[in-house]
Each structure stands twice: as structure tokens, then as C-alpha cells.
Image: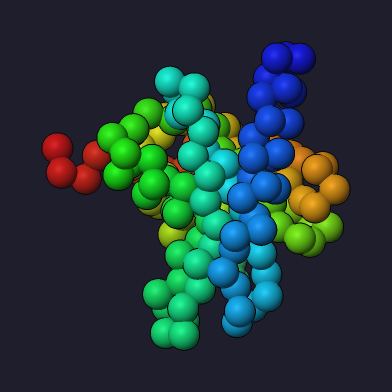
Length: 135
Ligand code: THU
């Protein structure tokens, strides 16, 4: 458990560091994420907004896409935080994107700017979509 706490702390730290690279000129809402692969690698991500608003990419998907494009597809946990004192939670699109790559026990660490956090099991955040669509 202590080990897990340490791991969450490390992920939040990585997300916090990454956050400085957030590109959010439209919302001014800076988000950082850190995705822990089962092999121990950490992939960070930030939100990248766009003047065509719908092209915006969230921090969580940036981290996921970086990892997958580097050949890593198995993940244990993700941490996400912003400048806000409110905890933040992955949006629906990010949950769906993660769903193709994680198992039910994947851990989501939802943090805030004070490094406070809550821990969720992925399947509790996105229930009832466990059936592979094309099998
Ligand atoms: N955003 C994220 O990057 N992750 C979240 O979990 C919530 C929202 C970004 C998208 C957009 O750039 C800004 O935060 C405001 O919604």
C-alpha cells in the first residue's frame, strides 16, 4: 500500500512537471497527465488546444498516444491534474480511448494542484463497455 502511495506520488509529480508544456490559450486550463506502463515506463501528456476547438487533445490522450506510438500498449495507472483546486477526472472521450488498452483494474488517480487525489478503478469510471466490438 505504501508502495502504491509512493507510485501515485511519483505519477502526480510527473504530471505536475509535464503540465508546464500545456498548450491552452483558449481555456487557460492547464492539464498534465502521467501514464504508467506495466513495464515501468512513464509517458507524460498535456492538453493541446486548437483554434478549431474540436481538434483539442486532452492530456490523458496525449500520454496514451505517445505511449502507443512508441510500441507500448499495456498500462497500470494514469494520474491527471490541473492548476485548479478541484480534482479533475478524464473526460468521456479519454475514458473510451483508454478502454481499448487497459483492463478493469487499471487505476485512475484524479488530482489537484495541491497534490490531493482520489483513486478510482477504471471500470468504475466506464462501466458496461467491456465487450470487444469486433470479435
Ligand atoms: N482537459 C484535459 O486535458 N483533461 C481532462 O481530463 C479534462 C479537460 C482539457 C481539454 C481542454 O484543453 C481544457 O482541459 C478545458 O476543457
